[in-house]
Image (cartoon, rainbow, N blue to C red; front, side, top):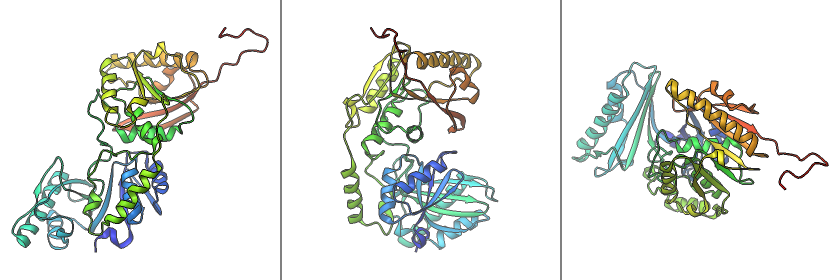
Length: 392
């Protein structure tokens, strides 16, 4: 019996700072219990809900099913346990391909790359000695992805039930510089509280990630709906009939996207072309309006504005970003009455450049960059009693 089968407990990895939000998502998708850790959430779920969570999670990077847990103080401990104690034929076949990713920390073993090679050798030798042939390593699209994590000399070997990083949804065929990861964009939308009751606008749409994730969320579509290969299909207790029930449950909940509920713009033609190309891979593409425009020329009222403006790395870029954020603040104040703006700012010290007081400031990491996701509520313009109508 593998480790996950003893208690139906799995591990979901997530970006730093999003653990609590991830735990909420897991419970909404059917997890029975959650346990927050650093950049991970352990959870308990039935096999049915494990599949649903894997397919429908918008926030997590990977979901892992532990198959073994053991004390590991040396490289030989890792090799010996993997070779002698794990019946790999329940996960892999000699004609399959596999890949391994490793993480180590606070342990006698310090090299994650060497740990991955060590585990690869143990698996290869196991099959060669038992079956006379072995599965091959394939980096790009293996049949099975295996994880090994070693922390404080405790090792966990797991199967990736999502078959690779879940932020790689499959719809993004064109990128711009420094694109926002799909699961981070989904987290921004979730944190903002947007529910489709107001139009959503992104004035810095880039490669269209916020627009696309908002549409997927509104339509209740699986974020990785273009994927057909799932790691949970390689678990020894995978049940095809149960998987068909999960798929039907998901399909029955999908709804269409109203026209012009979600729209975006960007000043760069390259960004607009990238957004359109990425949206074209999904069924709601024609319902989302994307234009090449300068936000300063637009007038948006009673909407949700969610965006990720440029950050600026070098000194001269920072000064440009400060000016851009000031102009964006003026745009909100004068042209976005009744709207709520959520802005991901790449440096907490840049928030004041917007010139408007945020009602909320949330610490979020975009990779290793400590950002602030700020909410700015813009009051609706109220015409004083007895004065002329400003719109006449």
